[in-house]
Image (cartoon, rainbow, N blue to C red; front, top):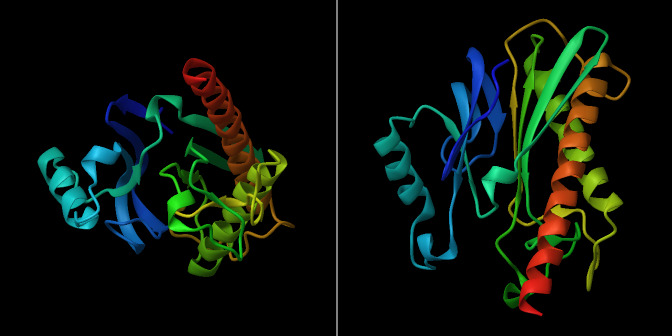
Length: 220
């Protein structure tokens, strides 16, 4: 597994060759083959309300020769990405995350548009073991659960309840095709994925909170 490559406004995670990637990313959602997962950092000025964000991102990827990649769009400072790895029963998992909570929501509720920000959580998970399609879906569920647990542990209270994520989170699961049928919490795959994602998001939340306090001190 190669280290993430930071080239602002891009962050690149090269995978160990082409493999299936499952996500709901803006540019290539669903289960698609990919060799890399990208983050594209943006500012509010990059995305005015009348802009078609999907077309804009497609043009950005085309200019970079990266339309084959799965790509996250984020307003987070990508230089503050976090990385965590875990191993269980011989299965290695790695999570790379960018974390912002200015767009936080409590699941089952929505804040009014005026209260919504632009921060988000984007997580790429690379699994070093071959999964069936069902296990891939289960691993995505475990990663989502781990993200939520890490955010809830931060204790961010909203008018609608305790923050559980943001309104624009996205997660991508990358793993080769294989015979592993299960990736739940009783399995080594689920344990490795869950711990890697939880640790990466928890570190990202701490970085975001420290940056948010710094911003308030500067402008207070």
